[in-house]
Length: 282
Ligand code: AMP
Ligand code: FE
Ligand code: FE
Ligand code: ZN
Image 1 (cartoon, rainbow, N blue to C red):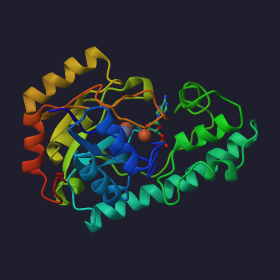
Image 2 (image 1 turned 45 degrees about the vertical axis):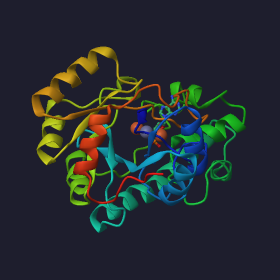
Image 3 (image 1 turned 135 degrees about the vertical axis):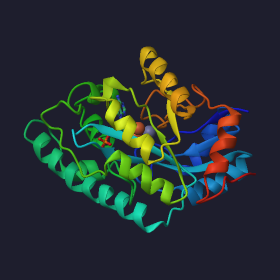
Image 4 (image 1 turned 180 degrees about the vertical axis):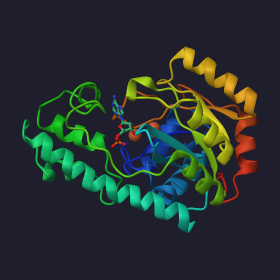
């Protein structure tokens, strides 16, 4: 069984529709895939239909944007939560709305130095999608400023750049609690991805574990090997699940479906713990 539990569609910053993401997953030889768009579950319905048609199982999921009181960005994967749980819905809606104002502010700053307008960015975003820096990157590519998203993220759009603006995001421990309250299974995404920005310390892990964290995404290309060792130790100590996934974004990132996988026993445990919605099977 080939299980990949982290993928994005154009409901957030992936480049393919939810149906196309399922087709790509099937083509890559996966048996089970999770759709985990940033702060949105809008792709679930389309993905469910397409998964069944492709003979795939779909784990409905989401990636919740969070930020610690020290300003460190944390991504929290949620599997099998109730998409209509009011508390969780309120938080992700707040974050999603804040992403819009934040992108406008970044474009205002960028426009001082680059040929970029707000219209150029909107042109890159599917209607209703969760807006992110990747869409700004796409507009910069279209304007000929950079060659691809990766180049934009190593220079103009890094979290250390002078054009970078933060947006509202819940605290990681509160997000873990909300995901649990919504019947979901919270898994800390790429926890030691130090190339993306600062990573959290002991206190945040402790707070997230106390709040009900279920697992750690250990096998992800952005986690350096020494960080994975640390995560495996933490998982053993606290009885956390270990997942591995690609973080597929279509052509928006080099990440390929199936480059990291999750064990069937771990998926079985996620299915036992998740009570907000069910795995969709063909
Ligand atoms: P944002 O949430 O708007 O701050 O943007 C962060 C998103 O950008 C993450 O979800 C990543 O998927 C994406 N991202 C980060 N680094 C890169 C990169 N080097 N190339 C393409 N996308 C990236
Ligand atoms: Fe993303
Ligand atoms: Fe992420
Ligand atoms: Zn992701």
